[in-house]
Image (tube, rainbow, N blue to C red; front, side, top):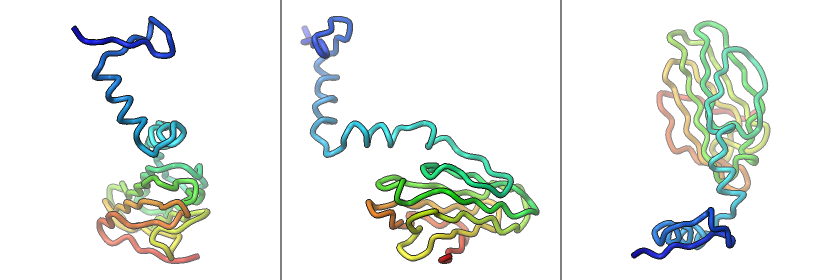
Length: 149
C-alpha cells in the first residue's frame, strides 16, 4: 500500500508518494515560487494580437502582428521585465510587406539591438533574456531585421 501524506496537516489535501517525490524535485531546484508563478502566468503567455500601432505590457511574451499594408509599431515589452523568460514575435499577416516593428522599453534582443522589424508573413523572432535583459536569439525565422534606437 502506498504512503499518503497530508499537505500542511490538512486531511483534505492528501498526496501520494509519487506526488511527494515530484514536490521534492521541484523544491530541490533553485527556482522560487514567484519564478514558477511568473513562468506559468497565462496573462503573459497568451498571445497578444496586434493590428495597429500601440503600447503593450512590459511582460508580454507572445506577440502576433497582423496587418497586410499598414505597419504596426509596438512598444512596451521589456527584456529586463522578462529576465529568465523567452519571447516570441511573429508576423501573422496573410500577405504584404508592411514593416512591423517591436521596440523594447528596456533590454536588447541580442545584446546590442532593441528594435525588431518583421516585414514578411511568417517571420518570427524567438529570444531568451538573461537577468540583465540582454537577449539571446534562439531563432530568427525568415529575416527579422534588428537595429538600435
